[in-house]
Every structure is written in structure tokens, then in C-alpha cells.
Image (cartoon, rainbow, N blue to C red; front, side, top):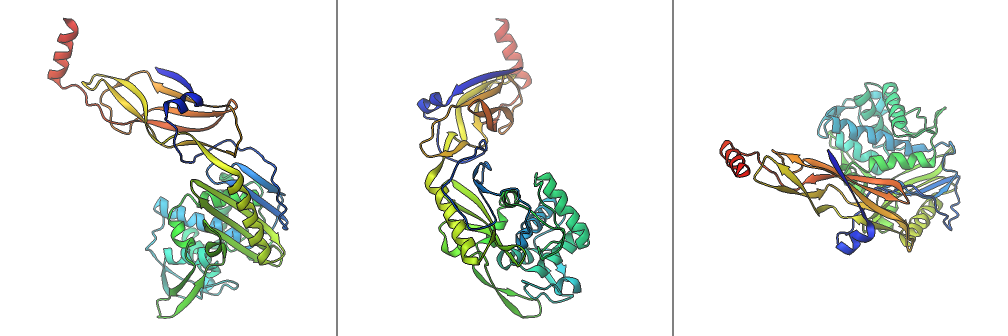
Length: 386
């Protein structure tokens, strides 16, 4: 059996439970005084995906090298699944070393660490590294592209179609500002990415002793406070593009610009969107991560109850000064049966905004409760009998 307890946000405030950290919230649209000079743009909260600004968000357009966000995402996921290792040595094919456009000048038949190849994609948009990873993970580029499109569908990127792993012009191939934001948000869940994306200038060492200097194509990494990731793109067809992320305090944002007329414009448009959101929005924490003033009874143990811990924070991403009806609802086990281990799931906390669920977190046992030993059980029965 489960017992359902509903506690309003005002009650939580009075109890002093609320502290600060971000998580998911309901996607709401807000008007923004922005006029980016590009074909399409999108701005959202990273944690919740809440849309803040959109210009032609689902219009299908070429996105140039921003498609490498998916190439990198599949590489990180291959490591996560055990299919690839960061320290694995990858042999570069003639096909990979012969890629044109942005490259790090890989040498045919030489071996490079997977993580070093990934870094060159994140920093300097290396097409040859993209192909080397695509051939390793997919077996060939065609199979890798199929995986790219499958993953896009899984993420709900309905207006995206990949034709290669680099973003070089090839028909049919397209995406949209909203889909790029979705893909970037997913890639940002991989902490290893930031080790690469924060690099500004570095020498890339080749196995034959050569070095190639790599410079980050995302200039905001150095010149915008809080920017620590993103992906640029340019072709004549796509124009100047930029997907970027920046974090200040407990708020991380994601922005996308497609089809700016020049490089300066894409960076200025991105800064304007990020500045607007940082100045106008906030993360209001409705439930802090950690121990709550709740407990659950335990049967079959000398430990009569266990305290409850929230696995993560519940927050609302909202415009500053905005007041809305929010409440947290707890669904807890009526009674636990020993043994209970610290970290066992004992319920959930659900955050509602204007009556609509916006986020939830697991509630965990803060400590364990061992089952009665034979002697302890005998004593308990005797005590109850008396």
C-alpha cells in the first residue's frame, strides 16, 4: 500500500525546506524583446527545456557542422555503453584522412586515441576525426548515419535528417533550431564533453611527431562569461551557425542561431539571447536535494523508521517576479518491510505547476534497517504477547 501526502509550496517555505538547485519544469512560451538577424533561432533552459525565445524554430535548414553534435553524442554514448573506450587506439583510414574542410590532418594508418579525436571535433570541428570515429563506431559512415538518424528520432528531433557525419553540403540533409537545441542538451549530459569544449588553444600531437595547433571555433568560450560549450558551423548553404551553452549560478542555458550573414552576427545574436535570459529569468527551487522532514515506518526491524532523502532537487524555471500556483506532492510507502538498505526507493515527490506535473524525483531511504535476528524476533513477539 502507498500513502499519498500533498504539501503546498507555502508550507514548504514555512518549514524552511526550500533551497536552491535546478531541475525540470514545464515548457512555457514567453515573449522576448529579441530580434536576431538570422534565419532561425532558439533559446531555452537546459534543465527543463523551457522555451524562452523562438524564431522559425522548426523550419528545416542546413546546419553545417552543428550536425557534429550528433556525431559527438553517439561517440560519448558508445563509451557509456562499453562499445568504445576513451583510451582505445583508432586506426585512421585513407577515407578519413582525405576529408576536406576543417581538419586536424590525421595520417592514414596511424593510430589515435578516441578521446583525442573527440576533442578535435569539439574544439576545431575536425572532419577527418569525425570520419575516423564514424567508421570505428558504425563500421562505415553509412551505418553510422543510420544511427544518427535513429537517435534523432529517439530524441524527438522530428525535423532532422542527416546525410553525413560532418555537415558538409549533401542533399537531402537538414535540421532546425529547436532540434539542434534538443541534441545539444542531450550531449551536455556527458561531463567529459566539458573537458574538450573548454579548450581554447592547444597543440594536437600526432603519433609521427607532428603537432597541429587547434583553436576553439566558438569564440564565446573565451569572450562570454559562463560559456563553456557549443558548436559552430558554416557553409555557403547554411550561413553562419552557432549552438552554445552558458551557465551562471544555478542556471544553464542553450541557444541556437542558424543562417546568420557573418560570424560576428551569430556571436552577437547568441550573446543577446543569453543576456536576456540571464537578466530576466531565475531558477526557483521548490524542493532541495537531500534529507526531508519525513520518515517511513519499518516492519520487522528494531529500527522503527527510516528518514527520507530527495534524490534530486525540484525547481521551477520562471521569469523573475512571476508568481504561479505550485505544490509538491509526496507518494510514500505506507510501511517498509526489513531489510531496508540506504538508497532504497521509498516513494516519489512530484512537482505541479498550475495543476500540471512539471518534474518528479525519487525519494530514498536515508539509512538502512536490518531484519530482526532470530533472538530479536523472539523478544519482539514476547513483548507484543505481554
